[in-house]
Image (cartoon, rainbow, N blue to C red; front, side, top):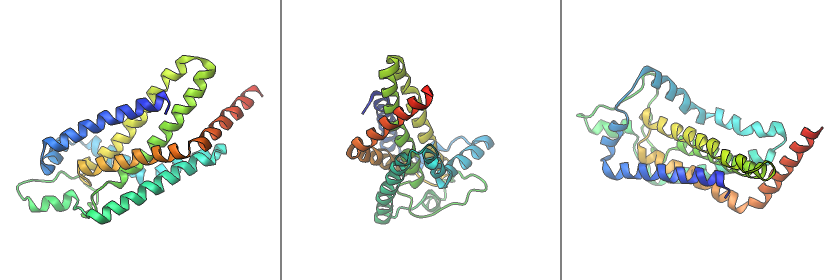
Length: 232
């Protein structure tokens, strides 16, 4: 993996270590209340609609490379999503964990934070499909950005390579916000989105590793086409 994606991977691992630390430090329900201790109207609206990106709009974004005749980029995203989704559905069927709305029903002394207007689910909580989708999308594009910047840096100097770290971190932030939105909306526990993010991170990495040569040939073709268009 190139430097841009290494930055993305290291940042994700640090975030994962922090989340795992929280999971070991607090009981499940208490941690959920801690993460939902502060709600505002603005946050309610933002996280409600941001979470919805994983229910359709993010797949439209995944189709955009087709407009530039980069069909394999879309196929890579689609294959990553389908593979990760298969693993996710298998785990959901195996564990069949209750959602926060059901878990808090057995604890009358605890009040579940909810957002007005959001329809609550009660089953198949583990792992989070939304978190997986957000991380599949952002990890796929972090990989492509890293290799694009690496190729650009070989032509334009080292500065382009160093600049590749910023968009990678931005993608990770977008994925993390999507995962947290499920906790904020009380649709999932932190453990659900943690495992969902792992599926969304690992699946594209494995597929890229095994299909690296074909994808890099596509990248070289893309860069060559871009240079040709620029020169014309």
